[in-house]
Structures are given as structure tokens and as C-alpha cells.
Figure 1 (tube, rainbow, N blue to C red):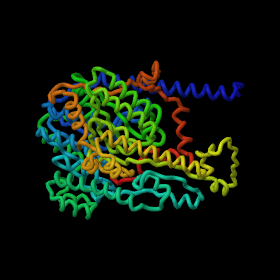
Figure 2: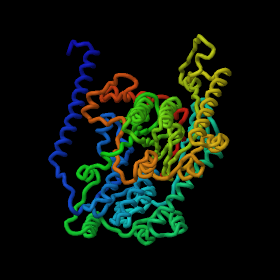
Figure 3: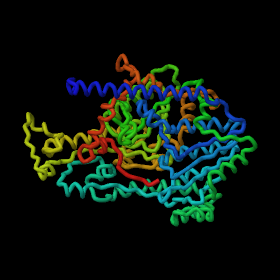
Figure 4: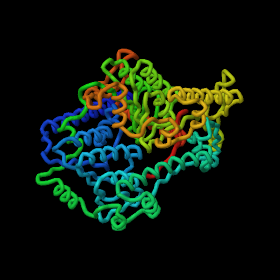
Length: 597
């Protein structure tokens, strides 16, 4: 047995593990580089672009090295759209084949993909969708909604079509808290700020039901119109079909919801015959590598991503519990600051996909959008699946806000509070005693209740945040405060409805945001542009080596965090407080709902 002290043995072990991990990551990068170097870099003369829509789609790959490795097969929405845009005018590309499943990438992202497919088809090229099944004993609404944008749909004979409408389910914990003797001291501004209801209620309140039903109704209407348009059916007929769904494969064919039942080999043979002699298939990412990316030179438009819950500090990534990336105020505000201060940047596109979170972090990012406006640098917000509460806070002072019809946005409100666990622990034989140096020293304790003074201060904080939020919305959107107060109250809206009430300017995605950025910067529609991401994307080598800025004026500090301890650190937080701690929304958080795709 070694006589080395246990602590030193642990440090040595972790150092070895860290070194092996780093070496493996470097080896992966080297092998990938070699593969690219020796691969065929030509685009065939008759190419059929192939897209696997069953891959996971992400808005943007996190800077975290482990995220780059774990998400190696994730497709970025922007790159897929760029591939379709490039292929649209490439004479070597004659058609498109898309492999589609249930489709669970969110309604707004589905609409983004639909827009790109329809723009591709507008060039006169064919587009064929193939699905083994649109939901195997499960909903496939979004996948089929995407497929309806293609001019031909194939379904495997054994497959099903889960076109059966949209449902939302919310988990309510009040009954469990009552059984556990956990008291709740929470409040919100105002009745539509429904994230709190998951803890305080047993079912939907009237306001909660009203807001959620309106959003689902809007989404359902979008689904009906998209299917009706794509399949050449009357909207009333599609509504009736959805009420009868789901459908077996032969039933879907009979109802003209698909064009043909067939297997993959039959589809490929059909596509190659359609494309002409010598046609070859090429995945969209490989095509983009060979054909070259678009928008690499010309007038510069900065692209800044704000993805995930809004938090203070740098962007982060949760590799263990599927939490994905966060919108760190230090990183995002720093990226906006860099783009604003760069004299070569003519305009900024700020891509936001966030359910909100920290009020202070949201305000930090908001300040940079105000600076952009003050300094005359046009800033256009493009919203993804969700841009609500803190996600709307960071967007509300943009020159223009663009959302998809299915984007969930709004939720202009605030919530907060705590769970009191003293009685639960007393049941387990655990007791607490307190020593205080001031009357309100235990205000944030999850053991002791608010004092009368503490509750009053808490209510004052809620009021302060809500007043600040609504006033800034009124100022940023040029709306009367009275109207903002009517449409706020914590209520969520679909992008379609948000446009009607003035929270959104135009409906669409990247294409619309880019057009608006050109117009705001005075760049001609046919002029070359450069879309450059801020902060500058680093190679995996650079991330592994780490990066420390000289001061807070520099780009946000992005350090390579691949050590075993650092990656396991979120575990303790996830296991805290019956699993509720990390899931509890921030002051500017969104409702906890599950929408079946």
C-alpha cells in the first residue's frame, strides 16, 4: 500500500484523469481534421441535398469543450438554413430529400425549417420528405407539419401518422407539499405569472387556463393552416382530420395526408430517378463544407446568441442533466459590447431563445441593447422557440423584434418566494434552532417564515421589479404604459398574437431578421454581407488551453472547464431540495409546461 497521503493520491488521480481526458479530446480534433483533409471536397454535378431532420437541432453550440464533444452530431439551425439558402441558387443541386420523424425541436424552430424548405422549393427544385413514422405510438404533429412544406411525402408502410392535435400538461406539486408538511411563501406580479402555480396550486387557475388555452389555440391554428396549404386541403377538412387522428399508414394515404407508402430503398431509387442520371446524395453539413459558407465577406453584421435560462456570470453548459446552455450576462453583455464598439459592425442580430431567469442578469444584458440604440447601432432581435419574461426583457429595446408565429413570448411579470421545510424535517427527527444578529437576518432561510417586515420588503421587491419591467417595455416598444399594464401581468403569448398587441414587429426567422438588419444599416438587398458571431468562436484547441481577458472591458471570460470535478459540480444542486432547487424559475422565469409535439 502506498504511503502517499490520501489527499495527494486523490489529486494525483484527478490530474491523471484530466490529462487523459485532454489527450482524448485533442486526438478527436486531430482525427476530425485528418478526415476533412483527405475527404472528397467536390460537390457532384447532380446533387440531391440530404437532411436528417431526426438529428437534434440546436440554436448554437456552447463554447464548453465537453459540449462540443457531446453535441458533435447536433445540427445548428443557422447552418442548416444557410445550406438550403446556398443550395437554392447552386445549379449542381437539383433537389432535396429530408428524413423526418416525430419532430420535437419546438414549433418555432419547425417553422424556421419550413420557411427554409419553402424558399428552396421556390427555386423550382423538388423536395421529398420521408418518414419511417411520424410518431411511433406518440404525437408527430411537428414532424408532419414540417413534412407538409415538401412537395412529396413518403411514409414507411409500417409507420403511423400521429397527427392528433396539441396538448399541454403542467405538473402541480401542491398536494405533495401538503403531504410533506412543506409550507409555501410565494407571490407574483400578476395573476398570469403562472410558473408559481406549479407549487401553490393543484390545477389550473382561471387565468392560467385562459393564457395557456389561447397559446395552444394559436398554435393549433398554425398547424391547421400549414397542413392545409401544403396538402391542398381546406382548413375545415384538416381540422376534422386532426380530430380523428392518429392514423395508420394506409389511412394516411387514403386521406391524402401522404403521397406514397414505401421503404427507404424505394424512396432513394425514386429520388435518384427524379434527379436524373448520375445523381448523388450529400448531407447538408458536408455540402456546406465543400460549397463554402455564405456571408463570409462584405458589410459586417454581428450575430450574438442568447440561449437558455438567463443567469449572472459567464455562459455555462450542463452536460449531466440535459439542461443545455445558459445565457450568462457576463458573456452575452460582453459580446454585445464588443459588437457595439466594433466600428466595422453595421448592425447586430441578437438571437434569443430563453425562458428567462435572473432579473439582474437580464437587466445587465438589456443595458447593452440600450447602448446600441443610443450609439446608433441597429440591433434586431430574432426569437426562437421561447423568448419570455427575462428572455423578453433582454429583447424589448431592440430596433425591431422578429418572432415566429409559434414563438412563446411575453410573460412580462415577476415571481419569487421560498419553501418552508421546518415541519418536514421535524417529522424526520431533525430540529433547528436560530441565532440572529438582526430582526430580519433569517429572511432568506428555508426553515423560518418571513417576519411581517420581511414579507413587506419582499412585496416591495416584487413591485419594484414589475414597475421597472413594464416601464421599460413601454419605453422600448413605444407603447402607452396603460396598454403595457393590460397585456403584461405575467401572461404568455404566441408570436402570432404578440405581433397583434405590439410586442413583436414582424413574423419570421433568420431571413426576416437579416433583411431588417440590412434595411436598418442601409445595406442594399443584393450587397455582400459578412455574418460574424460575437464573441469570436474559438477552436477546441483554444478552448482547451483556456483564455483569460486582461480586464472587464474585454470579451467575456470563457475558460475550458473539462476537469472531472468541475463537470460533476452541478450534481449537488440538482439533487437539492427534492430536485426543485435548479428547476425553480428565477424572478423573471417562465411557466413550467410540457407541450406534446
